[in-house]
Image: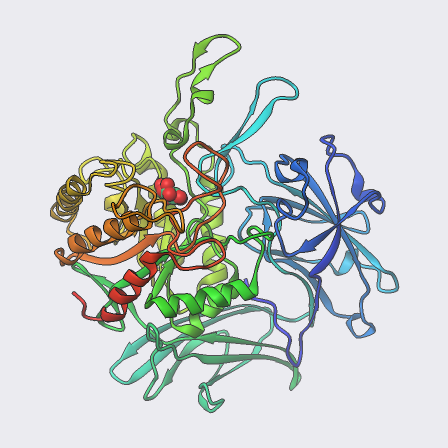
Length: 598
Ligand code: BDP
């Protein structure tokens, strides 16, 4: 799906700003029929949870209503008009002037539709959005409603970040001609000094012309037709931390008249997993960076431009070259920044927490009313989300395929890969992902409990990605033991599977300012000691090709007895102040080149 663009032929109306808002009364009533009454102000984009001092809004489970209106300019009268949401978490229904125009499930990918027929050109059109934050066993990610009595209910979700909801990303209306460019697909190949650009244009138009321009705006290649191959002589490659972007200008003509145009930027680079190396442009790459979150004060998971640019600045400051979009596809704008800044990205789907056992609490394993224990089933016996998982892989790849920064797809984070049924669940999803994008390697991130001989999914992936917490969740505080366990386990994975390994999470909860002469749990000194130990082990393994610390910054989670105002494993605090360990990483990573470290 193309990102909205303003150019010679396309116009945009931004619909961000203050919308009317109210919580659903639980009846899921027909509030879209008339203008909403008794509303409050709500910023868009933003999560609604932390804007007001009202626990009802913060903890809300269920539907909520948003509303605003829009006038269309005269010039749009014979145009195709599209309404597009960057992301609404998790389900959305959209009415225009009381008529259902759009519906979508999946909280981290965009959706749009031609709404021309719903709009009144002479009228202030009313847009009403119903947002639902509930999850179940069919959704990605999964969740479950627990209803003990009529009034006592809660939403259990099997992931460690706050279930922020609302219109979290920008909303726009844009217009195109009736004959328009639906999609632009670009893949590249490199051979000696030449770059090859293979393109496929989706459009009903027949006269399609392409121009490729370099960063100075100089024409470097020209083509026509719906698909083809262009070559760029003396090509400048997109390199980690040294990005170079070309622009592909696609134009559609009718009787020699320009009727639609779209400019897609792309980089020329190659990616390949060979033996125990991850090659970018033919050279062995070493991942240094973080698992992140889209998370900040007040706006929650809402798109936050200033914060995102600040994060890229900190990534550069600390010497990182990559991050993973844990645990959902991030805003398109963030990927554009990564393309431009040369930051390498592992693009992750929202399939987090297909591993309910990691999150069960006493409440869910004991039926207090009937006084009996509840047996917790294996996730593969209850999950009904395989179709939606495939759908979200498709949405993510269709949205993100042209970003040179994305070098690998991550199909899921920490599933119960060692439970019977994991292979059957993942095989069709991995096959589908490969068929849709054969150009990028695939991974599934393994949880603490999965071992080289018990994981059923390692044979499906190109790179083994492990989240490891020896010294924290296991062998708590015993770093000498942690060193032995980590080292032995890494060797085990490599010996058995002969695939390169990235540690996609390692980290400890650390309270900023909590310091001691003895490196005790939760102190800044313990975070440093833990990282030093892991780095010592990493440096002794040639097949270990990357280190992503968990997490870039402290972030909000559901309340719990192991979480003090959120997860504190950040190297930066939630408002981006460095903990001591930031300097340790800065020192280490600036000495590690992106290429040929191993
Ligand atoms: C891992 C999860 C991550 C959590 C982290 C932790 O992948 O989402 O936040 O552990 O416990 O299991 O800090």
